[in-house]
Image (cartoon, rainbow, N blue to C red; front, side, top):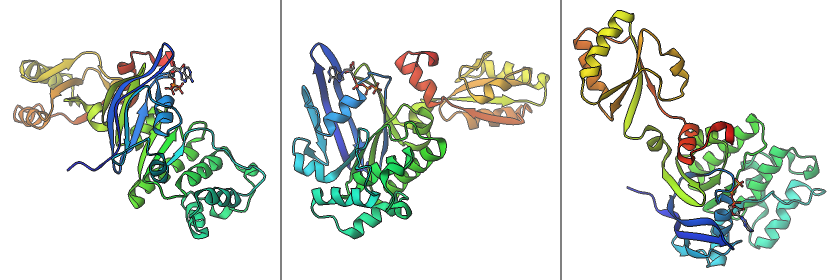
Length: 321
Ligand code: ATP
C-alpha cells in the first residue's frame, strides 16, 4: 500500500523572463520519505523549493501540501518547516533565546517544546552559549531546530550538509532519519552530495534544465531491470568453460570491459567474467553453473552508484561538475 501523499507537484512551471527555470514538473512525495531532490547547478532546484515554500509564485501548475493548495499559506506554514536559505540568527544571543524569539512569532510553543527540540538536534548542553561561538555544523542543527519548533509534518531543506565535515554530515542525516522514524515526518531535501543521498534517501527526483528526468525509489533506479555480477572462478580454465556456456545462454550478456565503474571492476581479469542478466535470472544461472561443475568461487553483485546514474542522466562528465 502506498503511503499518503504529503507533497504533490503538478505541471509546476516558472519562467523568469525568457528563462524557463522549472518546466512542467510533476511528482509526489509520500509520508515517511526522505526524498532527495537532485540536479546540476542551475537545474531549477532552488526555484522549486522557493515555490513550495511560497516565496516565489509559479508561472503555472499546482503545488499541494497534505492535499491542500500551497496558496493556503496559513495552513501550509503550520505544517511545513524549512531551512532553505542560510539560517538567520541573533548571533549575540544564546541558542535557546533565539528559539524563544521564534516561538513568540509562532505564538503557541511551550518552553518544554524548546528544550525538546534542542535535545533532538543535540544542542541542549550548549543551549545557553551564544550562537556566535557555534561551529557551522552547530548552526545548521540550530537552523533545523528552528524549522522543527512548530512540529511540522514536512521538512524542506536546501543542501543541509553543504560545507560540513563528514562527522557533521553524518549527524545531520542521522537526525533526519530519526525524525522520520520517531515523528512520522517527511523530509524533502536538495543536495549535490550524491553519495550522501544514495545512503540516506529512499526516493529521489532528478531535474535537468528545469525538466524532470527521473523519479523513483533509489534502489530501483540504480538496479534498473537488469543485474550485473562479477563471477570469479577457480582458474582461467573453468572461466573459459563457463564463458562458452554463458555466451550461449539466453538472457545473459558478457562484458570484456566492465560496463560500470565499481570497485570490483578492477578485479576483472583472466579468472573472472562480468555478466548482465535479466532481472531475477541469476539464481537459475548459478544452479546451471553448479550442475555443469563450473562453480564460481565468488559472485559479486554490481550496481551503478547514484553518481554514475546522475552523470548519465544529466549527460555530464564528472570532471565538468
Ligand atoms: P544550484 O544548484 O546552482 O543552486 P539550482 O538547481 O538551485 O542551482 P536555480 O537557482 O533554481 O537552480 O536556477 C534555475 C535557473 O533559473 C537558472 O538559469 C537561474 O539563472 C534562473 N533564475 C533563478 N532565479 C532567478 C531570478 N530571480 N531571476 C532570473 N533568473 C533566475
